[in-house]
Image 1 (cartoon, helix red, strand yellow):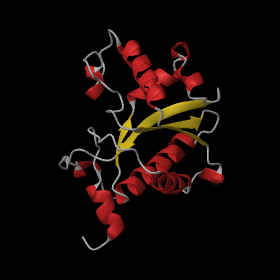
Image 2: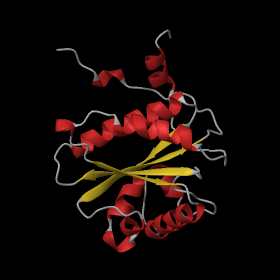
Image 3: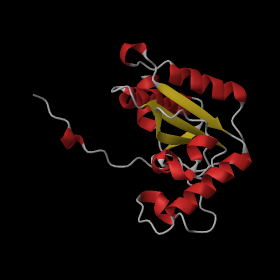
Length: 184
């Protein structure tokens, strides 16, 4: 593909195995700057981003998730939450938490655009990512106290997390269903 942007979109994959090497501050700053330059309705920028790189905080977030998941039937990789060595963020050295203003009707869409910018910027800088949807439910449940740990304001709800780091795998593209695209 001759177009770098389209090639970046078509080659990005969800990474579920990471090297332990941390992302440099310069690379992380470029990724975050790309994210916050996403469009948003009325330029409200109704998002909060939390960047977690501290190993103890990452361990605590994972522990809270595993405790919450006990006895639950969860989809995807979260179904393995009770296995030894499980990490809800796939042992990535960086975890982003994306939260949306609950009082803004457009905030979830806006946060989706923010996230896509983050994912594509990261991929263009050889950083792997994986969107973690299951973390949202845990953070938003007040009894887990995770919202306090992450300093998420009460009027914000977590939409998802993003695992981020240097990829230690090269997944193949999965099938994309074009039947959902209709020309009228």
